[in-house]
Amino acid sequence: MLRSLVDAFKVPELRKKILFTLAILALYRFGAYVPVPGIPFHEFAASFEDSGVSMAMLDLFTGGALSNFSVFSLGIMPYITASIIMQLMQGVIPAVGRWAREGETGRRRITQITRYLTLVLGLINAIGYLLLFQSPQYGVVFSNEVPTWLTSFIIVFTLVAGTAFIMWMGELITQRGIGNGMSLIIFISIVSRVPAAIFSSINLNNDLASGIAITVVTLIIVLVCIPLIIYVERAQRRIPVNYAKRVVGRKMMGGQSSYIPLKVNSAGVIPIIFASCILYFPAQLAALFNVGWLQSFADAVSTGWINWILTVLLIVFFAYFYTSMVFNPDETSDTLRKQGGFIPGVRPGTATATYIKNVIKRITLPGGLFIALIAVVPTIIFYFTGNALVQAFGGTSILIMIGVALDTMSKVESQLKMYNYDGFFK
Image 1 (cartoon, rainbow, N blue to C red):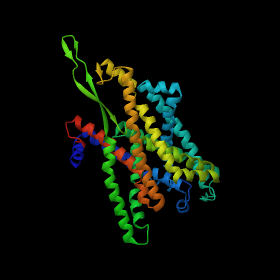
Image 2 (cartoon, rainbow, N blue to C red):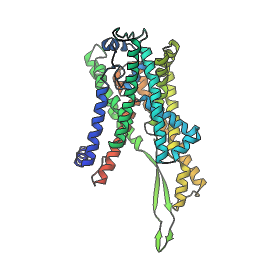
Image 3 (spheres, rainbow, N blue to C red):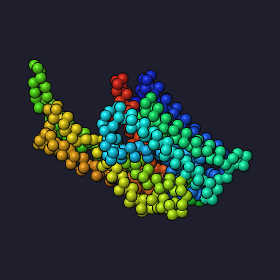
Image 4 (spheres, rainbow, N blue to C red):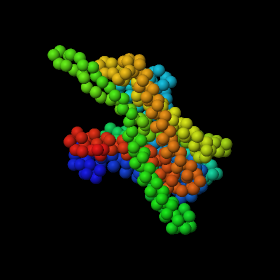
């Protein structure tokens, strides 16, 4: 791996992309510590420490920006939520579904609507956070030197502008850097909380030796689980395909054998991200309306047995849903038929499409249950132990980190092989 990283920096074009990506991520982390104008920082930080579990999880996905009430307090969640809505609309609204099938033109239209929807959701969230932090629970009091309405306007405008800036940075990474920009922003937000979580784990108990032992054991368990997660992430069900011989002009074509690679977890970390956004959406609503029962409901679905059950169900659902969005068995069957390919023992056409659908259904369920298990078990452990390191390295966090890391490494590897270098994966 070290040699591959050295080779990556030997390629001028790839080196520029990597350095550009790192620069954008560094700018994002800098913005997470720039406070919003007009906020009494120290008083707010002290009151945020006593906030509920739902706010703590939202803070995790913003990389600590929310607890700092920085310009990036809203994080990437408004964009992710807008993306989820547009994904769902593709199966509900026929016009949006047609846009998704129109190629680049349709994708640009969907992207533009997603951007506008992100700003709308960001505005709602910004107003909600402002009302919440002005409530007695947090007690943020603005200075009398500036009119309250002007301070409120500046805060809301700054938060929405921060969301737009994060969205722009993510798209810049996707277009000019390496990997998916939005995923990398989530990745760096989670990773940035790990050092603080390690120190918190060590100092969790009064006994320092016990804290160090628990922290070391936790890290060892995480390191042992990583190869297993990578194995499942890269596992495939290969459907064999044969191509019939045919004469084209004076040449004999076909006669080869190949396969259709179907990943056990073809949705990657998308079900985790989508499920997390759905479960933490009530926390965002609670921040907006600041109602007691709504806050209690947000805490209930953010932790505890209700959260565990809903997490499993939502992850499995989104695993099936996203797989059906990205892989169309009917199109695959039609392409095989046009190319003279067939699955041994299966008739071309409808029978082939049905066979592929059944295979996808069989492998998606264990893949979805696996990532759901990885997501829920650490959450249960954190619920009973309160160890911040378990939360930072929880199933959701570690799956997102591994999934994004593998995706980024695959992008770098494809670039390396263009220049005849060995990649990361042998």
